[in-house]
Amino acid sequence: GESVGLHLPTLSVQEGDNSIINCAYSNSASDYFIWYKQESGKGPQFIIDIRSNMDKRQGQRVTVLLNKTVKHLSLQIAATQPGDSAVYFCAENGGGGGNKLTFGTGTQLKVEL
Amino acid sequence: DGGITQSPKYLFRKEGQNVTLSCEQNLNHDAMYWYRQDPGQGLRLIYYSQIVNDFQKGDIAEGYSVSREKKESFPLTVTSAQKNPTAFYLCASNQQGAWGYTFGSGTRLTVV
Image (cartoon, rainbow over all chains, first blue to last red; front, side, top):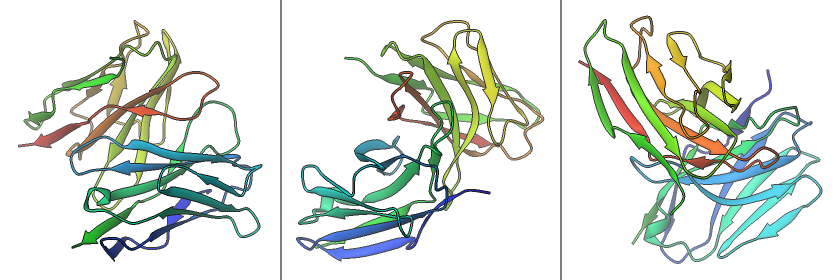
């Protein structure tokens, strides 16, 4: 079946460096993608989203890139801070009816001082 | 402030018991969802509801039940038929036509 997956389960970066978290999706009908951040013991928080008619979208310190040719999504975090340590999920809408999202496994981002 | 509230934060259940997890939202969102999260896995959909008095099974509905009597509330009951209920449960909501979910802070259920 269709699925959303992440390439790396754990990513360690030095404080101040840029982080890149990757996501592969397989449902070519998906036209909306979201990145969520989840801190330990808390619910996921919205970070940034992108529609399939875009290749790039920027937020505050974060950028999402979408490559529809290879079905790849990435989240870039500039100047990573200790507060960025969390699990990051990508999600897709599957392109079908209803508002259901399909979530990936998640990547643990660890920021080292 | 508008938001989505889950209670309790921690819940312990004896084997064979049913327990109900609360989810309340004051965002006036039409749709509500329940997800289960296990370590090393993504969020798996249990049940969802797009309007009051209507709900649909998700991918792992067996052993769970829900109701949607009010727009604001979407309680989840974990029944004794759920063989492995220990997990982190997340409730979410969104407005029809909008994709981004608002999540609650979760309930951690442990079977003792």
